Length: 359
Ligand SMILES: *Cc1c(COP(=O)(O)O)cnc(C)c1O
Image 1 (cartoon, rainbow, N blue to C red):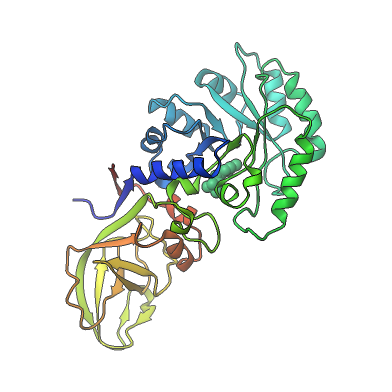
Image 2: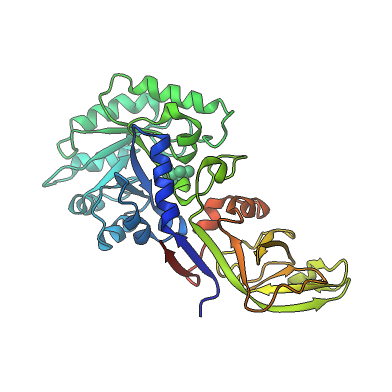
């Protein structure tokens, strides 16, 4: 009998991919599946995204797991390869690589290969995480063009630091830097993550790289997923395992962090940070039981949380389902109550949670 359960709605996933295509009708879609498809299950999610043109992951192990799972689409390694010995693995498995640094370029130049690797050259236009400096771009471009181990179709990409903020002029600065740099290059361009797909149509280019929005989560500050035409894919649920009374002034949970301000009843739900529910969720974080929101009280434990259902409540009983997030309770709100972002909550789902796939 499963308690903590992540229910994954494939029809919502497919609808979100359709939404990406509606927003970026002239771009090919590289669906981002890193970190176990943002906690949704790598291979099952890939299997449902037949409409994507390519997949992207962050680690070669993730790419290999997709191939083992029978996925044949092109796979792009978003940070490229880290060791020269990975190049043979990339060639054998039809992985494409980002090149963001001299060590990768040198390894490609020195490799003895029986075929060619497709490369995406990444430019740092202002995020200052990965990418070649704008002043290095021409040299990298020419060396890749001249490298017999590199496929002649070079792709060019960059990444925005602040695309979730529509008003932030830094996005325009990055876009302008990139556009100027690549203007005379006959190469497909790829800039936009989910937030840029929504906020900056002028950044769409030949390829877009949606991650979060495919999972139905809002990538834009101040907008809900439904306002953006997205459908949440994951519901995280568990069950009430006890309903009990506490008296005014009695402390609840580790450290006696919260005390009842009046006599009340608590529902104890079988989910905790051992399942990936955030320990930093504050008092008052909503939990949905039988269609009503109730506040979390006391510290989140490894296996349980307590919810204040009120002194007179007769509608909550042991065995009832409790929803931590999902279609009726946005994960964006829960992330904000836990001082984090939805990305982290999704990635933190632990192996103890049972996955159930629908539609
Ligand atoms: C993770 C990632 C994405 C996807 O970002 P979302 O905000 O989830 O859409 C796109 N590009 C790169 C380089 C990434 O690392």
